[in-house]
Image (cartoon, rainbow, N blue to C red; front, side, top):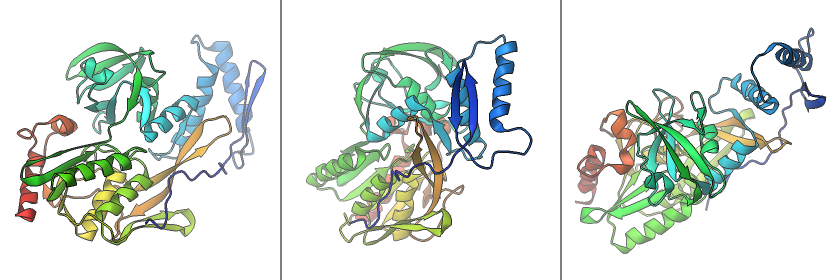
Length: 394
């Protein structure tokens, strides 16, 4: 069994800020140390700026949004794209998504690395997104009339989600065309794992994200494939952005022989080691990855590579080798902070580097984003994975 497990640290926020903002006689206080420059205190400066806005701005503005923008800006100053602020609504949506059940329209999305827009990578069967014609590769440029330019993935998904039965309007870019779709949200159970048997008893299993429901779905898929006399397994991690560290560790334990899964190094020199036991599938493995395979996907890929139990096919992975933890704030908001680096069993950090496959098969960006919906005839990366697997099983 795993000797160390960790995802939600649950540690109270030990940082603090002192900012005082007067809104119509209401005093908003956050306590802080070391933000006084000896001349103008942060709270006084914020109050001055707010009073100037009230007296002179011709724009209307929301007081709470001013505060939220301030909190977001404070964490943006860290210079880390993975450190940011969740307001109450965004936090609730994030927790729902990582649990694997939520009310929304039924799709996986990612960030396009070129234009930073939010792009649809998979549409769930039977979902409102499918019923309304959304396709992999579509980009979400607006939600309920609000532009999504510059918005983080978590902010966009929080706006798309809502109460079951409520309506949401999306502005979509498809190629050069733009259009609007309105649809009704419904309760969604996220199918993070899907599987099928290919020819010659080659099992195929796709993991779209490592969420709360993924380990159970993975186990059920493995049992079904075994019942069909699986001889080898291709695991598709393309466009998988990561997820829960504990989930990928549990899945790795099924796939790896006894040994280290990964090392996690925290501030101050503290280290946590995730280890697998000696119970594992023991069948040939091929892993499919691309440039959007990140974080937990790279944990699994790196562990399989370093243990020498599988072959990697596709494109170099994203290169996210750092770990974030969520810290609650007293008003039901939270901050997500980068707290550690992880290292593969061989001691390698892939942060900023990614993992280079054993067999590189390049495809264009549009094809990569549609990986989940490609046919076998269109999917040259899967074709290569099957070729490699045939060489393993004979």
